[in-house]
Image 1: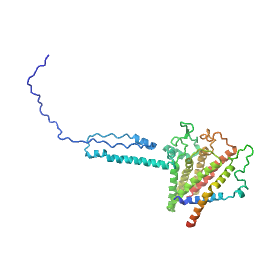
Image 2: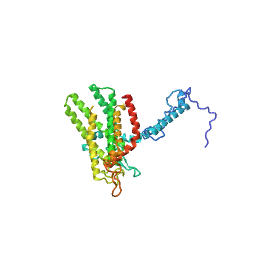
Image 3: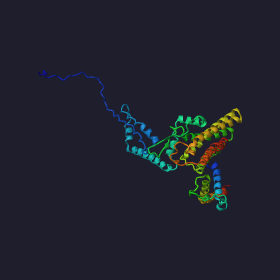
Length: 333
Length: 86
């Protein structure tokens, strides 16, 4: 069947429509956001997930921006990119320098373990330091890693009995500031007082650590506890000293109870601190009394009864009279 | 800031170590039996190394041997410092 042929049909002619016809072409530059900063080359655990968590920001479309095209050219400018790269490599070199030179003296990884705390840990630990009578399990939790030689302790985040350095450091600074403040309220402030208090507090800690180290050497205790553990344990007494100072100065300001209240609070804090140290240092100074021994160091080494008696006596002498003397010294501000 | 209180501590420590270093070996320590091989390894030959007295004796003798020469240097410094600055 054939189509009917229309001969000489004029082309279809629609009436002119008045739709807007773009008269001039506006060149909208395709804007792209600058590339996200790349994570540093060394694996830093603290910075790692902060960088990778932020996805690179999406590139905004060209809708609506009417910036001059020179802005787009800035990012692609080779000079700017060279600047970025130099900055990145400078930061990386600085980090490598710090790690190399100070990593020998202060091992940053060990320090990070001690500052790995949470809010609930801090609150519970302060409660235990000030009222240790009802706390039941005092042993630190261990975790076996892949090779059986290398058991390490859980960080303070997961184990309430693990010593941390956050509370002792904060307590030390608070003690220095508080004792200077109280001296200022009494009218006896001079700027060297800050330095005196700081050296007093630090020498107390040094003397304590020397005492424990001397005792460990003389009594032949082979304990595998770190130095920072001992620093942490000796720093927990500042919490009690702060509480005692605060309450005694408050009571003397309000003319409440005279010297009985301050002595009472001081003795309570002293006994709490002594009990806390007794329970915590039992695992440091008497390593063979715990269940499995400490990392195989004391395995197969039978301690004579007199040795054990000397060690227990040393632990008691350290916890009670020495701590009493130190706390008295620190509180006599 | 560091020097304020720690200077006294350093002074006490230096005097203490001086006191240990000037003990006479044959006139004093041998009299009270605090020399290193005073304990006779009688029976099986195992030296008594773990008792408190033995470890203290060890500590004293090692301090004396090691700190003789550094103590000379430290004492000279302290004498000059105290002479100049009182």
